[in-house]
Image 1: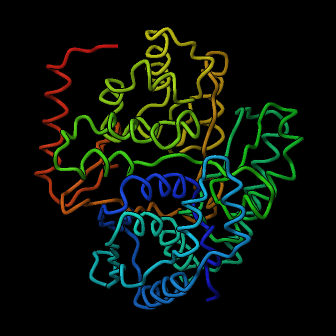
Image 2: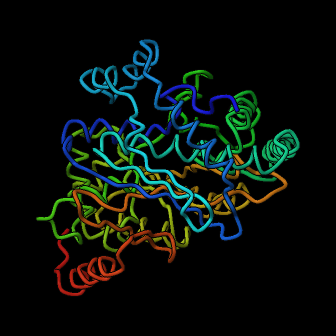
Length: 407
């Protein structure tokens, strides 16, 4: 196979947003990331694992070009000090451990500095996903299916069947292939005016390389790793206050720029204990990634109103397992009460005649200590030691039951 990842820009924008803050504030943190495929009926063959190894070696040979660095420097909140660091940076194959010992035939972990391992997640998942679909199926047939479904989606937006407001493409990690993702972003860009006439606005893509090549906005702020590593990687921190530490360090790095807060790393209810007046004012909005989206949105609107903040000035960004039909219902519910936006992944980048893979790479330790996510949906977390999950839950429960809430 030809190289799947051809540029170090081929990752999600939030990896650079978090990467800059890691570089400036947590350069010595050490993390381990673990791959998991949630599709129990999937098998990675020996040939697939060998191709994944070869693709990751090719990825590790890449460096940034000056043109790519100039593009990153043009992003308003990225600073020259971080861009200069990236001039020297490249992936290390030595940080990868790949074997066939996993239950489905593939075991993959990365270990090293958070600076390095954070940047490995998205390209690694894109490689695994594309290798699987190219070797398990006829890619030409899948791409034809993908193209047909894509055109149907566009037609139903253009005829007003669905109206979803602002949306971005978030599908790099689970895309069918680079060709498929590029086709999707290109077609939405070409149809942008027609979509806008019917109330759907294509904003951009999380894929920085595609954003550069097609002249659209790169989109993305923070991920769960930011909250987990900062709140749980420092052994002196009570992990029930992970959100406070994470938000505070984000503001130190960016001020009022680049401010969409992720709410569900250790449950949204716990997040709201820390998302009080200062943070709610400074951050332009919040992102939903688990749990019932309507309940979550109502909860966020009540929270803003309780603080005396007009919810219409804040963005509710939805990004959990979306399709256009679901997004249309959510948009209709909230459109007159807040700014509504959607980040849509697999549905836009890997919707074909065969089921998509549900693959993830999660941070499983930071500075030698287990870390865990406790989202608003059971089963989305991942931790090697259930005793740590129990400890984290008890910390959160104690805080929620005993701490007095102050605005």
